Length: 175
Ligand code: SLL
Image 1 (cartoon, protein in one colour):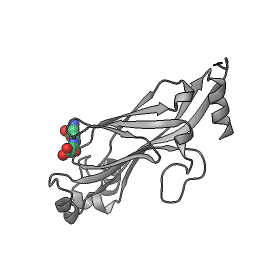
Image 2 (tube, rainbow, N blue to C red):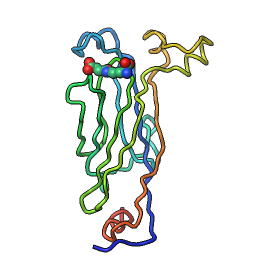
Image 3 (spheres, rainbow, N blue to C red):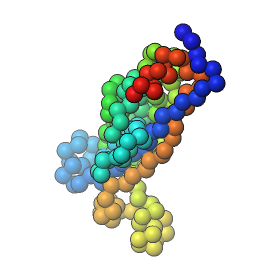
């Protein structure tokens, strides 16, 4: 297999989370009375126009991503979660913020090593309540947090492949 020397090619992605406050009814039915939020962590394409109500582009990343592993806090059972097909996202309920390790595995023919990203799961709308209420930064009550709607925390990044194999370069550019 031939590497194409001197070439870099990148693919833009968005990664991060949304979170919403559980209603009293949801808190009862989710099986964990101490859980306060439902959240979704995701890796999405930043290419193509986003839909109005989703974050990230409509592009399916599976032509070059084989698996995304989300490593959660050890308070979760089975904290290592593998997602092997798009959408590369995971939803859970919980009570606390923590750092999620996001490991992106590329299709076998790429010959590329996995890439790890880190995302601080955000549940609380600190800045919004701070600005709107003029209070000191403090975790808002579930009631006031719910009024602000879903929390969003997303990062833009580019996955860069340097000296890619010719076949992988062809695969990427053909998409
Ligand atoms: C904190 N350092 O103390 C953080 C850790 C961990 C959150 C937060 C687990 C849910 C479950 C969950 O939400 N963990 O397994 O019941 O705030």
